[in-house]
Image (cartoon, rainbow, N blue to C red; front, side):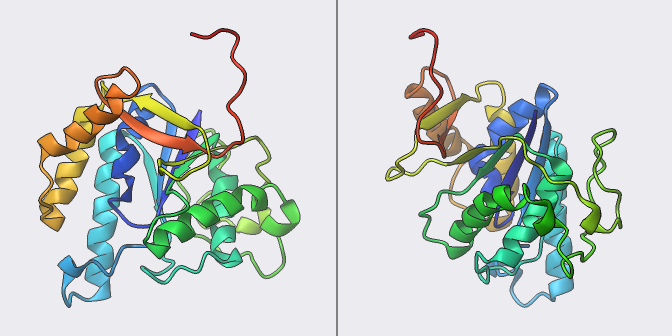
Amino acid sequence: MRIMAVFAHPDDEIGCIGTLAKHAARGDEVMLVWTTLGELASQFGDAPHEEVTRVRREHGAWVAEKIGAFHHFFDMGDSRMTGGRDEALQLARLYAQFRPDAVVTWSDDHPHPDHRMTAKIAFDAITLARIPKILNEEGGGVPMAPAPDLGDAGAADSGEDVRRLQAWREPVRFYQYHAPASPYPEVFTDISDTAEVAADVMAYYQAFYKWALTREQFLATRAAAGRLCGAKYAERFTLKASHLPARDFLH
């Protein structure tokens, strides 16, 4: 199984990091993707863009290594995303390389525009990745940043012309952070075995941002989700589908 987590800024992934770590631990291929570098964080002050870029890429690499995932950054502009076709097409080409079975992203109604736009293009890219003439359209073949090394997975090599990408037409399950107003079914993942890893990632960002949130408070939020589904710790999502599949029995 391949899972791609698509978020706007480094640290957005904290809401699903236990789930991603759990999948990576069982041998699934996981990729963390950020649509921006999160370069407008006030913690950087007047640091030059080159320094901000370096630090943000270090953040992403640290988290990916911590959970055993691939990672990829786009530079769509912190708080400048539009949710337009060009942004979705960039992501669709990465879908065509990584070939995800599931995508995890923000909810559709988050107050931050980058979060909403990231959710929008993550969903739009599923369709764009299915259409060869769009993936390979003339004038759209700008080489991407180095592709992840997926071994025998058939991904494009670094520097390869992306116009040669093959469409990805398999079903993609689309998970989003839970939102109370969402009309979609809820899904919980039991992260009892990876909650401490998730707390480590939170603490890593907490040291940078100087959040007031403590490790104990973070774990308490996961315990609260766990009480809703019979787990010690859990993470909560919605699945963008009209109905969940039929079950054989009520168990």
